[in-house]
Image (cartoon, rainbow, N blue to C red; front, side):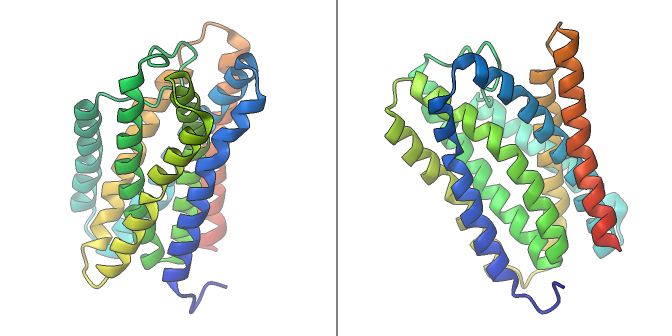
Length: 253
């Protein structure tokens, strides 16, 4: 089905779709804050499951299969996790998806969000493009995991920018500009695809996925005393994991 397909077309197409997802924040304009909270955290839970499923079921196994060196692959996974821990510490930024968002009214925080998003999207573009260069099916799975994360992130970030004093049009525009770095990263990966380093970029990106899912997202949906909400979030998390596992089984056959 995917034999002979030009990976550059997949890279550009997936990057454009990722940029379009940056506009999803506009949907928050018609939602009440109460409805926003009800939708956002289940999406965050789904996102966490998708990121971890993508890392463990697709990216790490494919890296080991391509390199044949499991120890080096896991070293790159830990390196990717550590790098994004350092990056977040330097930016002093979180995704601001929480119900009690302390950063809502801090305008300087809005700029950090955009800087963090731009860097994250750039590296994400490199990672997703790298998977397309290895295998189109792997690229699709990785993009789906990344996209599942983008929806709640963009909704949350748009709300933070507006509450931070930005106009809605300006917030959408700069969210879109921040997302466009995904395409820049993808094109860079394609230009450098002649090197074998691409095989080690995938576990590095998997470390990124694991960090975001386990360190940023899960704690946000794991702080509720309401039993029914906790069960809902757990189901959404398992759904994200199951989708990526299903894709692994489907594409493997």
